[in-house]
Length: 183
Ligand SMILES: Cc1cc2nc3c(=O)[nH]c(=O)nc-3n(C[C@H](O)[C@H](O)[C@H](O)COP(=O)(O)O)c2cc1C
Image 1 (cartoon, rainbow, N blue to C red):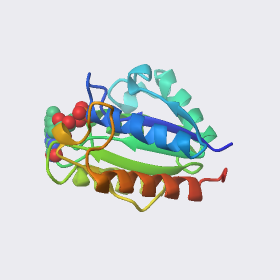
Image 2 (image 1 turned 180 degrees about the vertical axis):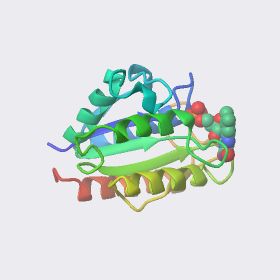
Image 3 (image 1 turned 45 degrees about the horizontal axis):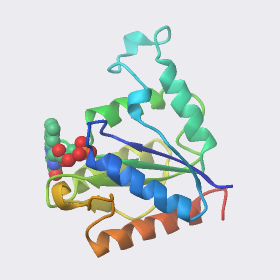
Image 4 (image 1 turned 120 degrees about the vertical axis):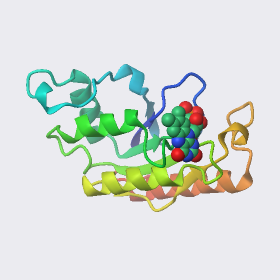
């Protein structure tokens, strides 16, 4: 069975990106994918500093790398901060990049963003795509930028715009099509 890991680059209470993570997870399950929805709150990692290597590398980095290696699909929802990716997701990727499991070379990756700006976090998406592709990740082409966040979802966590629903469906099709497991 095709498997996926989904996560959010914001762990804020009420995070819109966690809502997007949940919605995409639901859509992946409807497409027959086994989904593991994780929270970065359960993977604590200090601010990256090479002085912490090799003796004080957080165990969470190895744990997450193993999850990425075992998954066919990784979906990351992450807001834009100061026209880039969030400190939390950049820190996570920094620690992951130091692992030696080929953690970016197994799954196919999808990136989404919900941000308060009307451009829907497209700069943050670009930042993440650039970084992950240079680490060897294969990214699906759909740019899932959603904004403004305050009106992006209804009370059931469903996108309010038809165009966003279509884009999520397109991303799910791409993720399942390109994943190693196949459906
Ligand atoms: C430090 C900081 C910088 C931000 N920079 C941007 C930005 O460049 N573009 C944007 O659209 N929103 C920006 N925002 C707003 C976030 O996109 C918005 O708060 C979003 O809802 C956060 O995601 P979350 O709801 O998943 O926590 C910024 C917020 C913070 C706290």
